[in-house]
Image 1 (cartoon, rainbow, N blue to C red):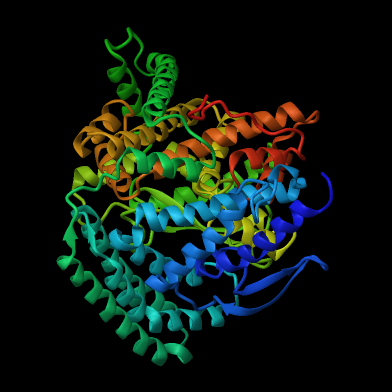
Image 2 (image 1 turned 90 degrees about the vertical axis):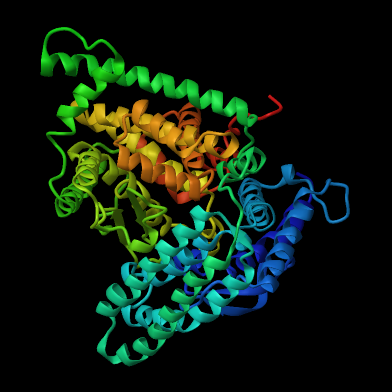
Length: 596
């Protein structure tokens, strides 16, 4: 590298963008462990520091999705993308290949973030067609202060009241933005809105201190009225007739969310189908000796009967007995996972990480049909996280209840504890707290790369099972792995082709051995969140590739060292991630781009 021109040109654009883009995302800032962010700063090239700007409080803020705010976000993203993608000899352009390692990975991370922000506004047009998104974002900002410890409890409770006071204006903006939506999204938004009212009237009300109760009552009454008005207004929203988003949009979304180029959709579907066949064959092979041990005699006449005969015993005889029993079992599993990770040196789980298993909040159940997780934030004193487990609904039939309890059998609950608790989602925020600076946290935790975040829990579950479990748990993992792949395939086929919901349920039940009620819930989630299952699958594959790359470039490989280092590096696109985690000992070569 000659001179300092590329770093200077990078820094004057990138450093302010880290903070300015964070200022549009209150939830992201809180997850990064901050309660305010300074916007409008300028990078001083002489001293190498940011100067000026003004503090934007985030502790009690709701996001601004007005048309003016969305326009400002577009301008903010374009102001970074334009010089970042300009030819080196163009005005304002610079040669990113000459950046030092830390800035080169920052370049890729921020460019991806800006491109995803533009995509959401311009291509997805979520603000005009997704009524569910407004409710879920509001719900998370009201729910997080109840569960996460990023600020003193009194401050968090007061912040909830302030958010409730802002809720009518927030939802008025949502109503003004929305132009049309599918019947599916409208119904889901109504269901989620009812759950949000329950959160306010029950969970938040129960936790509100006596000294704040009068203010809470006033604010919550106005907020609930606004939520119910928003729900009723959805009846007047124009129907777009279809929830499908199309092949071009899904492909671009997957590329941005996975953080690397992908082959054409048709090729990608073929690749997933091949992997699904391989996973199915592995499940069949594992079922043969178990079937022989249970039943003796000859093998059933087809693979479907073989696997279902085994599952009838393993899952049927080991299913949870009630919703409450599921919660108790999963709580024990999270603690067992903590010990396994440390004793087997799989991942460095901090002793202070406090994990609670709770029912999925009602406002999130349309998007989280089985299980999920939240936190901890990257605040230095916050080591609290929750695992969500979605219960069978109160009005479930006996068959549906049995389905849910069979799905959440002893072995699958063990897998869910790994994926959504320790060492899965909970470990990401826990180790992110060790990042060196606020800038690093805002850079990697605000609007993090979805493939990194949602691929890690599947990858680390696979790694933990492969290291520490055999027998029945390993067999159920093989089934669970098949279902993860099948979910990605359903996601691709439904949104890029003509696969119907009933056909998707049939594939999940007949080829991935999912119980029917769980399959229906998953398909609904896929319809509502295009690309979500595909991104989780691609992120999982990405983690596998980075680990292989790390092993190739490291003489003394250690699982716990790799995993600790990787999570502390932070979310970033695949090539940059491989470069950062291996101390710049070469960039991962990708072979799945359209050009190749």
